[in-house]
Image 1 (cartoon, rainbow over the protein chains, first blue to last red):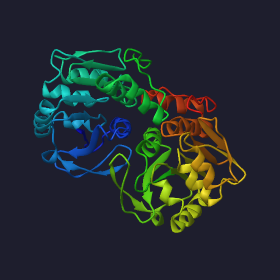
Image 2 (spheres, each protein chain N blue to C red):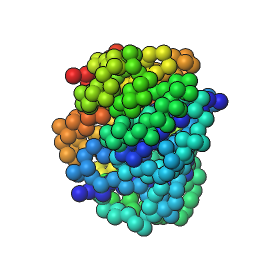
Image 3 (cartoon, each protein chain N blue to C red):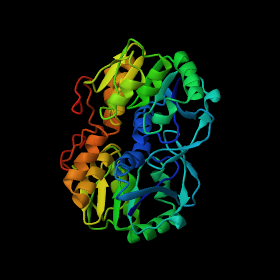
Image 4 (cartoon, each protein chain N blue to C red):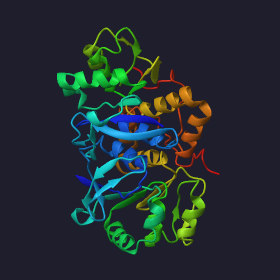
Length: 196
Length: 196
């Protein structure tokens, strides 16, 4: 059983976190899902969902880490304590997945330096400004580089998570999950109809 | 401002509720989102998300009501107290939207008797058995009938919610929301690649 750890914070974007959670939750024989915030408080998404979390210190970080985006990332990139702790858990993770502006948080740790990555297209200039040492890719539904997967905005996180499952566990399992949740999967990471 | 009330219960399917929440949250100038359970407890989704809710008694029901599906519906269709209270708030709502097996809960109230409705394709036989007086539609991404919108499984709820917004507020707004969240919208309610 692999731990699939989703981190949350105030003003996270709901679907960034819970679209991938839906997908991963279809294969409980492979993954154990849980939700963490730095200090384990109740956090509220930008869509007013109040979620109980566990603290980072309760996490087994040696699994998969998913970092959502959202307006909350704007403050968090400047929160040295948060970035320090994120850096620690991200380096222990087997894989790190980011959705939307979640890639700005991962970029701030330095883990994406010199590597290709993408983000939300409407927030792209801001994300680039967070760390110019990243090879930011403007046209991509998602980017896979070694153990780091980064997706475009919001809904792209679901396509990326299915792509991740396909890469690691086989396309048949990814396709079966998409069918189970009646999801019309864009399985081509280079097809990005929202690129500017 | 219109209240968009999402009801939750233990073992609700995450994306059924939070896919539509993501869409509605993009237009806070139109809708106020909140989350309710019968008694206002913390409820846990099938994907292990622990959500703080308000009780039905705190709801202004004269808005839009969204009912998700999930394994929790199997017990709830036989919970007379829950169905009684659901019937009360559903009859006060301007519109009622259901996702996946959420239509089984609405069907149990009698509100869909003699009307067309749809549901998750893999649970279709069970949903039909809950109330045979409903005109169950096997091939539909979603069905709109007066003030009742019912969708197929899980992801179909996002397409339906955008369709609802388009019907009520105009296609331009629905399209803008889809673009904002980089969502590849299946806007044709009759295109159902998962029909059996």
